[in-house]
Length: 188
Image (cartoon, rainbow, N blue to C red; front, side):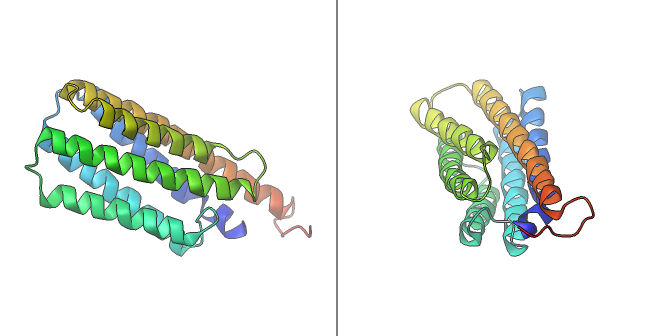
């Protein structure tokens, strides 16, 4: 838990990136499919790199293996999106939906493991559930218009970003409580 609280800012950076991605998607709704590919690819790579960095620093919620797997899946998703930017809107939509489902499941698992260590820690699970539900909705209605998809992606990214920002400050506060008022670790 000590290492997790020292790297609280990793969740903050990931949350801010998700918020920025979501705001770009909402305020530029006429974005082309190619621009969406570039923005999503960049977001997936940055999110994956920070997840890998967090796992390397011991910031994984219960298991560094899950965080490493999540980071690798995210980076590979971004790379694949950049390699094949000319894919059709439907294939891109299904690819993005699959990414949201996989990352949602991984975050729910990580959140459940974090709950074993921290009482009432639920924001990580909320982010995972939102990601999973959004991915399922994209699979159910793949023929939705490009504008609707951009708005849904933007809203989901904003909600996910908020969940990660809240989580980062809760983890930071947890570390402060564990260290005690003098900054030295408390004996429990």
